[in-house]
Length: 418
Ligand SMILES: Cc1ncc(COP(=O)(O)O)c(C=O)c1O
Image 1: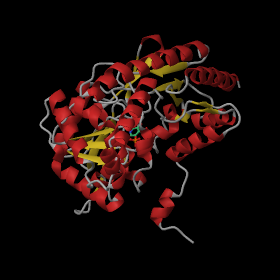
Image 2: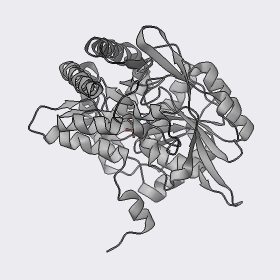
Image 3: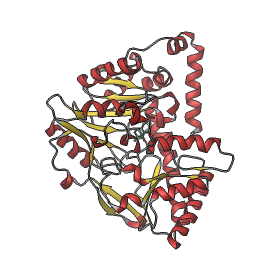
Image 4: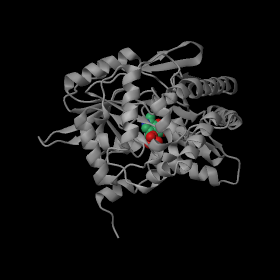
């Protein structure tokens, strides 16, 4: 039996496949495991209590439960939830959106699959358009989404050195040339893997470039505002007809319900709804049902600001302190952690690649993600920096994170000594 090119494309090992399979290895292992690899959100007790309470209310209201599990929703996604979300966003940000500007998906990973393939690739006039990722490193999950490796175009960022062992990537606008064959621009904000939050003025410039080129600016807010709000500095959220915002319920603490949200112009939402119908008939109803009343009351914003954000801010500070303590003899720089749930560490002149470091750590039960995977669109660029960084998640149990960082430091000391 043979696979078509489509089947072959998916039947291979990639960074995101390794990352998701590592969860399985880690949870089944009998030896102690230090999982600082994947993007699982923390289990924050106050959020878990809140979701359980929502679920109990749905169960107690027989009709709500029957509707949640017994019907296909329309392909755009559950209407009441969409209406409530439009109202919340308009009230909070003064936007003019209606329910026709929102579509749901089965997780934002599938929103990106749809959007990248809808705006990148072959056009009927014979042109081939790429997705511009203006700030590499970028999210590992974009890399293998499109059935075409050439789909992404990226540029190296400029690097700003900060005090106290930190650095920050900035969009190098001078390098953003030759944009005629661009089908869309996309940034994750906060950026996975670095925790960078591109500034309002960088975002504004990107928005102007997108408008001028008549292409969408896709902003991936999986960790961002309005929810789950894991941003530690002052950043605002913008929307316009050419801006596509992608949100998710995952980092609120609900990755298992697989709910993504897209806010876009009506034309794009119509296309996504049709795609939902063709590709998956309908979107799962559990996520919208679980958070509907939190959206209607606006409580989802308060929980994001008062529970989720402070929780991760504290976890980030602890993790950064452990890195500084255990890695004090190692040439390490930390990307300024401005949001999301990761630290991005840069080991200058690391004698081995971070893929090799990943393998050595994994054999000792320590899971991180090698930096090499986070440069979609820069695969052929032999920039040494790509091989000197790793991503650590600090969302797990604090003892595991601390011990993991200590053990990584030991392995690194060996590497540098050799
Ligand atoms: C930046 C970013 N975008 C999108 C996703 C996809 O999230 P989900 O499909 O769970 O909504 C993730 C998951 O970790 C992510 O980190």
